[in-house]
Image (tube, rainbow, N blue to C red; front, side, top):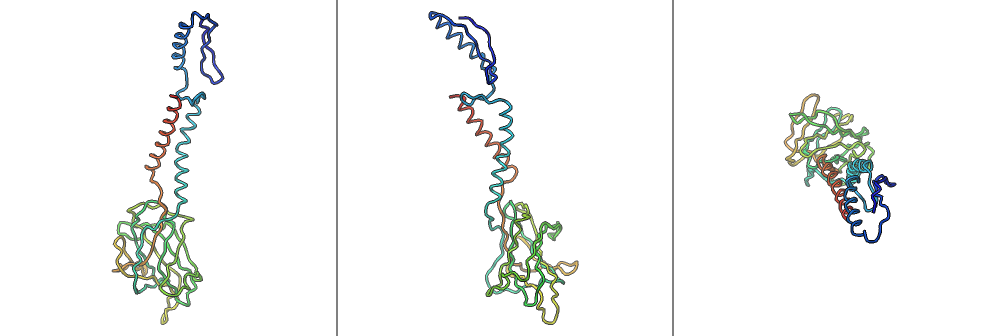
Length: 272
C-alpha cells in the first residue's frame, strides 16, 4: 500500500488517497486507513447530518433562525383568544353616575395578566336625548394613583345597538385590539369615561350613566370635575380582557431550548 496524500472532495472535506495494494497487506492497510481516517476527522466541520456535511455558514444561518422561531411562536400566542382579567360586576340594583361635558368618571384597576390588553367593557346606559359619543380612554397612573399618560382611546356612538337593550344596564364593549396596549401584571391603570353630552337641567336627559356599587379591592373610583378629583367610596362596574404573551425572559429560554434540541438532534445523527 502506498499513501498518496489527500485531496478535497466535493463537500470540501479532505479525502485520503491510497494506491492499490496486494491481498497480503490487508491487515496493515486496514490499520493504516483507520489511522488516516481518524486524523482526517480533525479537518471535518463540527456537525454531520448522516452523509451530508453542514458548513459553518449553514450553522450560522440556523443559529440566526432560532430567535425567529421563538418570535413566530410569540406571534401565534398573540393571536390567541383574549382572557378575562379584571372585573367588578356585582349583581343587584345600583345607582349610576353621570358622564357628560361637566364631569369625567374614572376607575383604576390592577393588571393581573401580563400581555396585550385588547378590550374593556363598562356598564353604562344612555339617556334618551343623548347624541354625542361616549369616549373611553386608558391611562397609566402616577404615584398618587391618578391618570398620568393616555395609552389608548376608543369611542362608541350613541346609536350603538347595545344602548337600546332592555333590562339591566348593558355592558358596552370597547375594542382596543387594533392598538392593543402591552400591560404587566401588578401595573395600576385607569379607565376614564367622558362625553361632550350637555347634562343640562332640569331634566338631565342628555348624558351617559356609569353604574357604580360594591367594592373592588384592586383599584379606586374617582369623579373629576374640572381639575379636582373626588374619590368615591364604591367602584364602577367594568371588565378587562388580556391576551397573555410570554415575557422577554421566557422567549429567551424558548429560543435556547430550541437551539439545544437542534444541537441534540445533530449529535445523535452524527453518532449513527
